[in-house]
Length: 407
Ligand code: ASP
Ligand code: MG
Image (cartoon, rainbow, N blue to C red; front, side, top):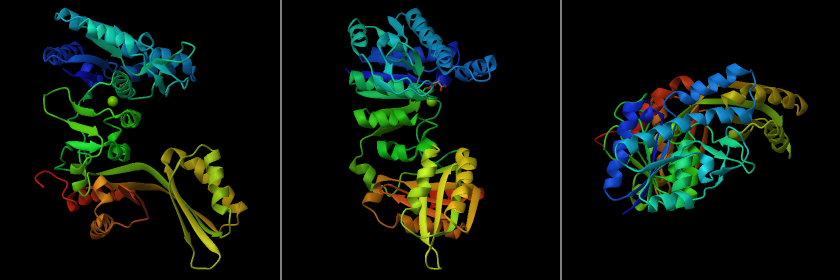
């Protein structure tokens, strides 16, 4: 007998027919002899609808009240599922976040879970109940309702699985699992059967559509294996778990891309100690997260070029800072590019295989794609390229590394 936490996303509980479908799956699991705790998202589109309502009520609605509004989405779906389960002859009970003491900090709209009280769930399970928990919500120290950020039900599920020491956390969604790259832009992609937590985190820009990234961080910390799978059929999906030797055998696991990047370069800054510090202090004081940084010395002695990438949303702010610092530091020029993308190869196999970088650069060169910046980590190599070549780059890398079906 296992203890399983199952999470069903918004599309899986979009209407009563689908909720009945979820109920049947839950009952099947229970009938196999396993204990089940179910976490649900709000019905598809509901969180967007509630958010729009809150914003319509006032141009800048109070964060605390917005969370109270948003949390109702999951209140409805969890109770509906519990009603349907009961009508199908199963004992079930729904709980809101505060009722099972999902404690969080007070960062409304993006609160972090600090603890979960497993006792109440355990005592219900002992009585043979199916426990249904409203995802995405918790309460802070003073009893205020908080929400965990978009996609936060995944994190609720993993936090509960961690607290209960469940055998597995199954995340049921409308895709079959995690793919070697985005199926929307590349043909012949393959479902990855097992992927490590670290790879999944590195694939954040793409993987985030499947799992809230915080849930993966939490799963890694607690050692909870996650099984991402479709709620519409029985096929196995992707297991996200500790790294193993099988994973290491593959050269790379996937290609990811991020078109939400921009690049700023400060050209010909006088090269002296403290320049980079001065520069990035100003950037971080403005709460801008920098992704890549490259400093090169210019051909002319005594000068350096400093280039960095940030998210597109921060571009206007970063550019303003770059211009004012360029003046202060007597740099010659600021070059700004908004239309750039980052393509990356990810794989734990890189730790033990060489040649990934050269193969990647060759594949891009064959397509005539210029690489503007390169960065590497232990399990990832990223290149900044012109955004207009993103799809071409992803497809050719996917092919060059034989990631597709039948390979
Ligand atoms: N309902 C919330 C959202 O749409 C949480 C979730 O679905 O995971 O973001
Ligand atoms: Mg989701």
